[in-house]
Length: 124
Image (cartoon, rainbow, N blue to C red; front, side, top):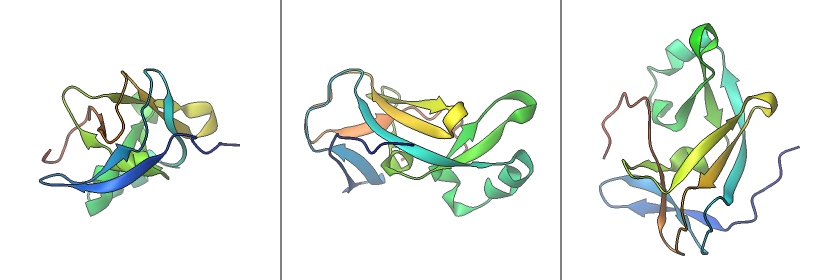
């Protein structure tokens, strides 16, 4: 079972970036901002998915010959990129889930950002 996060987050518009995730309360370093289930996409299908408009909202899943993709069912898939992110995505392969973890204290109202490692699209 995947429990809902207890931290209040919202999706809001950010000029020049589109939608993004914002905290509605102060978040401490190491807090789990969100835990979300994912749908794992097999490698052959992921090659097709990579050509679709929603590729910006998918995650690489696994590595090597087993490398596939995943669609996250939560706000975390809407986090914008930053070269100096305030959060990181931790993958839970055993449970087909992910966690969005605070890398530092995030004040109320601040955008939650992650670093995209496989950037194959234009970062706003």
